[in-house]
Length: 161
Image (cartoon, helix red, strand yellow):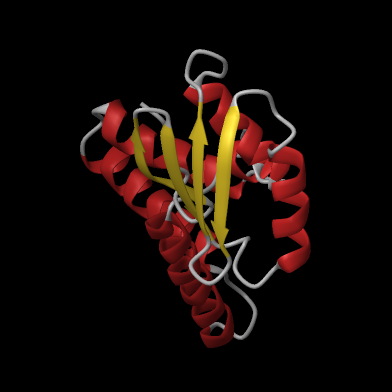
């Protein structure tokens, strides 16, 4: 089974030496289309190739005895200059949305405190307050100590991998 790379290239159909792919990079890019067609037709085992520049669709008929479908897919990625983009690690949409929300909250706290606090420092302060409160009331270390540890991690300038 061939894997699609969302937003880069999708496998629309694969069956009996017929592979249909869809990608945005071929839409209205005649130069890339011509380069792609010129190079892919030179590969042994390719019977025919059709590219629709309007939809970004690629239809490839090939001989499965000569060229394996997964190898052909990798060749297409390389010829369209999508190999690095497809294989790099990308954050999900929800992660990006949460990042924007926290950046907005950070700016709001910074502005409201007239530059004294940012969101991280405020959160660390809350953890410190409740951590000390829990340690003082109930010396059961894990809960209060955990909050203090979180606060120290937030305030440290060390970047985590």
